[in-house]
Every structure is written in C-alpha cells, then in structure tokens.
Image (cartoon, rainbow, N blue to C red; front, side, top):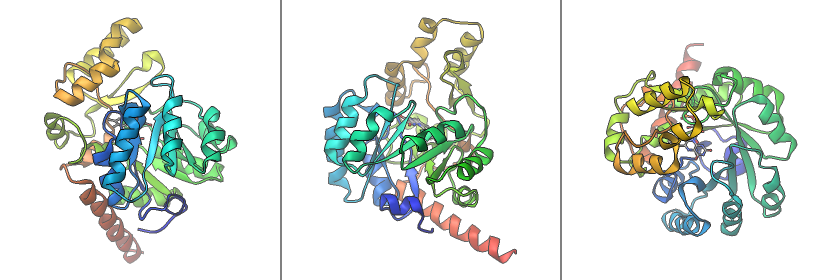
Length: 318
Ligand SMILES: Cc1cc2nc3c(=O)[nH]c(=O)nc-3n(C[C@H](O)[C@H](O)[C@H](O)COP(=O)(O)O)c2cc1C
C-alpha cells in the first residue's frame, strides 16, 4: 500500500487509522494496530479521568514503540480539557478531535507540535476545520458506525466533494473495512482511511465475547439510526433495545425517558457484560462485510493484501 500525505504526516507504514472507539479504544487494541503499521487511537471517552488515560497511554507505550494518537470527542462528556492536557503531556504525535469545534484547543496542541485532525460529517464542517488550522480531516459518511451528522450524505459523494474543496489531506471514513474499499477511498482522492466497525470486530478489543461472536453474523441491514430526536443521530447495532429506543423517540419521548438507553453507564454495562438490555452500541453498515474476528495484525495484513491484489486486477483489466 502506497505512502500518502497521511502516512508521512503520522510516520506510519500504512495510512490506516483505528477510529476512536468509546470504551474500547484502549492500550491492547491501540498498540496492536500501531504495531501492525497503522495508527491506533487511545480514546479519551473510555476514561473517567486524565490520570486513568495517562496510565493507559503508559501501558500502550510499553506495548509498542510505534506512534499512536488520542481521540477526543468534544461534548460527549464535559469538560474534555484535562484529556487535551493529558495528550499534550504524553507528547502524542496526533490528536483526533470529533463532536464539536476544536478551536479552543488548537493553539496549545499546535504549540506542542501535535497534529490536529478533526472528524467531520460534512464538507461545511471540513472547511471550517481547515480554516482554523487543522492539519487534516476525517470525513465520515452516512453509513458509518457512530455519528453520521445531519445531512444523510454517503461516503461516495462526501469524500470526493471534500477532497475537491479542501487543500489539507482528507481521511475517508464510514463504510471502509476492506482492501477494496481502501483502494476506492484512494481513488476518491483520500490520503488515508479510518475504520471503526472493522476494529470493533478484533481479537484485542475489550468487548464482551457474546457481542463479538454476534458481530460475525450481522448483515449490512443490521444497524439503525437512533438519537435523531435529540439532534445527535447515531448508527447503532439493531437490537431489541435499540428498536425500543427508536419507538420511544418516534412517540415523542422526553430526554429523561430515553436517557437510560443512551447513558454512558448503560453503554459500559453493555460492552462489559454483553447484556443487550442495558445499552446500545455504535455499528456501521460495513459489518455486513465482516465475517470473522481477527487480530489487528491480521486485519491490517488482509486489508493490505486485498488492496494490492485489487489494484493489480484493475490494471490487468484495463
Ligand atoms: C463502538 C464505536 C464507538 C465509537 N466511539 C467513538 C468515539 O469515542 N469518538 C469518535 O470520534 N468516534 C467514535 N466512533 C466512530 C469511529 O471512530 C469511526 O469514525 C466510524 O466507526 C467510521 O465508520 P465505520 O464504522 O463504517 O468504520 C465509534 C464507532 C464505533 C463503532
């Protein structure tokens, strides 16, 4: 797989990034992705304090000598200031922000030589990120796991448009999980790919075994959009609990009625115990292409192999 502006910027072998994974983007997965030549992201939303995150960063450093970054979702839990301070103290090479405008953190991050890459679901927000000095953007399409924004535009259109309108590098996300799709991302003009759902289905991720086992059998139709009623649309695994939540929203339920379904606590319980009646979990449509739970190393090797093969086939068939 070729070197790109992103692999050079982040000093990694392959421009493949493990997206922020709340509760799951921790040292075992992050170090495995980085050891395999991609970029793992310690996910601040997995920790209740800066100290907790710093310990995990230390552990990740013990497990890998390769670069890894920190993902900070601004506005999921407030304040995130201490996690930004932690990333600076840890001198990670890159911080991936998401959720809200990272402007107030730009000066301190950049002054410390940290690359700031903002995750956006629209061209408008991508342009804003460029205007405040972000080094790159991750542009996430409608099919993604997690938050697809409000415009319902799929990756195929969104990524090309962002590449055409921006000068900074674009990392494609939302529906990318295979070598073929990574090749497609580069064909669209992206300089890297970020994957969430693919790394959710990995051996190293700290997700309860019963959910992991289930992931292998899910289809592309097994996700639904919830939380639209509170302006925070989220693509999640289609479970009974998620359907119940959607029905409540459609019936006009108040925030306090839907809170038990979406609280951080219920999510944590879900990923720890596998009890589907506790919370909902983000999941992208690309789960329909994932049939086994592999190590991060095998995932990245498979992606690279398929990418090379597909590239060769494309040339041959010309
Ligand atoms: C379980 C799960 C948790 C996520 N948590 C976060 C998070 O904490 N911060 C963030 O910026 N993105 C988060 N995301 C989004 C991913 O980083 C990534 O952008 C997205 O999954 C890309 O789409 P894909 O699922 O089609 O690969 C999460 C996604 C999943 C599946």
